[in-house]
Amino acid sequence: MKELLKKLAEAHGVPGYEDEIRAIIEAEIKQYVDEIKTDKLGNLIAKKRGKKPSVMIAAHLDEIGLMVKHIEDEGFVRFTTIGGWFDQTLLNQRVILHGSDKERVYGVIGSKPPHKMKGKEKEKVVKTEDMFIDVGAHNKEEVEQIGISIGTPVTIDRHFVDLKNERVTCKAFDNRSGVTIMIEALKRANTESEVYAVGTVQEEVGLKGARTSAFELTPDVAIAIDVDVAGGHPGIEKKDTTVEVEKGPVITVSDAAGRGLITPPSVLKWLKETASHHNIECQLSVSEGGTTDATAILLTRSGILTGVIGVPTRYIHSPVELLSLRDLDKCAELIARALERVGNYF
Image (cartoon, rainbow, N blue to C red; front, side, top):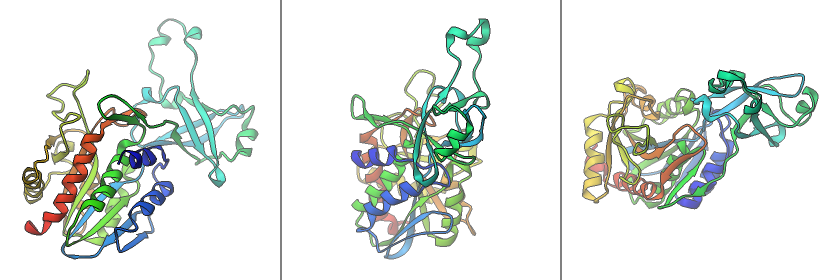
């Protein structure tokens, strides 16, 4: 799982440009499913035939990123954010601009050095609207000649590294960790139920792929797989979140203060009892922050019973997300066992 996570996290795919991720998934799961297709929006849908109840497991492919919106005459590139960034995490990052013919162009998000700042200017937070990317060009024409234009997607240039205690860090664990878990659970599960493994697109900009794929498939029950905000570090108190790294999979009870998902009791019972039956340590989450693909799936057609399994992750929506490989393994185990027991509940 570690090598698969590394491959997926180091791959690149902002919303609407998830091709590289789809290719990795297809190569990994083709021997474990009966059908694979890509729909009109770009969702990868893999089907393992079986009997009722049918189960959809969904993990979004996209990562937050940037997009070129203007090229200045002097060759500096202005950009907009795609997905939810905290401005301070972007300043002085190295980035990749994915130009025409899939050429990768490297650049840096530049800023004025502290030597040239005066007084309170050093205390001022730089906003993304004031940032720019420097690719080393002399002028606008040079930038265009290397395949960069308005609309070029941009991602962070970061590599996967090991930390202590089987913890790892990289960009895009949100949600390449979920994709890794989905693939591994599909490999481990010995279930008679029909399973749809769906790599959804454009989650970070409106849960779009989950909405359209769930509408087509209409499963009896679904699990969205994503990251969950982990505390246990300075700046986050227990009252903010009780979720921590190395304490196992997170089962969402409610997110976005109830405006997103309120997990149906039958789904909670299925997931909690599966964890208990197989002695898988897990955590429960009630949060006030963001939501996941589960919200879109839940509200599809006349409603689809949906839950979320999350992997506890620190520093989400930054270039240095951190998780435990032990949690990753337990998440895959919980979903695999839940797929095997789903017929007892629905």
